[in-house]
Image 1 (cartoon, rainbow, N blue to C red):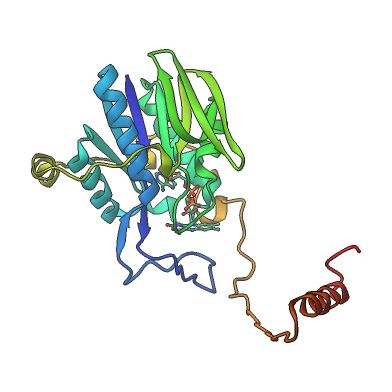
Image 2 (image 1 turned 135 degrees about the horizontal axis):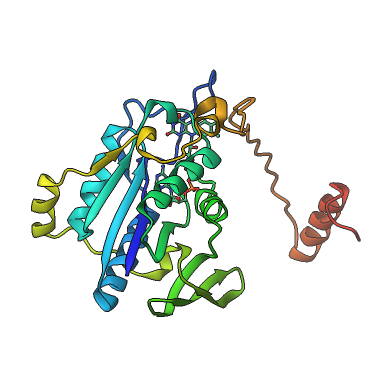
Length: 264
Ligand SMILES: Cc1cc2nc3c(=O)[nH]c(=O)nc-3n(C[C@H](O)[C@H](O)[C@H](O)COP(=O)(O)OP(=O)(O)OC[C@H]3O[C@@H](n4cnc5c(N)ncnc54)[C@H](O)[C@@H]3O)c2cc1C
């Protein structure tokens, strides 16, 4: 089975800073890592390969330094990596990213399963996976916490829900996004690290992608517009309600009622 795992290089902090002019993320001077959720996606792909054979390829869209996350994936045991990088892609939003990655998948052609992480810890939208499934007209199972059964032509998986899980079955090819409950990602092996050092991923620009529509990418082509960014101000007003518990509870109830957030 040929499995494609989408991986993203993210800033190693959840305290993301945005450029107030362009609304884009400031990445300069911030350490970058492999998106933690994508490690679970890689691990699951490697486990499926162990069972069914085949090949695991990672694809990332980003600047040249995103090769680092490909090397980490190679160190974990992935077969090969593709970096998609081009100045024309700068400023792309999630839709433009999904469009570009889906064109990459069209070029690869021979795959049965695409795995993404649940979300990227910097952008945090969880949109790229579902948008790609839409672009490629593929079935998608989001938030997979366990693959119950997978063959060359079908997958049955548990989708994590707030109150339990659903069991969904889909024909392949399909796209799944995985949550951290699915497995424990392996560390890079010494042999893998040696291979990763020598590995030069394939690097594709937009000119390498057939029928690529430049109008749909970059800051201009992205349908999202960041109009304004700000940090919400938090206000903490605390008050200690004294007295015996029954009176304190009654007093608290009256205060909450006065706030108009309860009906009775
Ligand atoms: C107007 C606008 C301009 C932007 N400009 C820039 C910019 O100039 N530079 C920039 O870096 N970001 C930019 N961004 C952010 C960029 O669009 C997102 O980082 C990107 O689309 C992924 O979205 P996300 O981080 O929410 O990922 P999610 O949707 O949360 O990611 C889910 C999963 O999709 C996969 N995935 C996500 N992104 C990639 C990727 N790039 N390659 C491979 N797999 C991936 C991973 O498996 C990941 O776990 C911009 C966003 C907007 C709205």
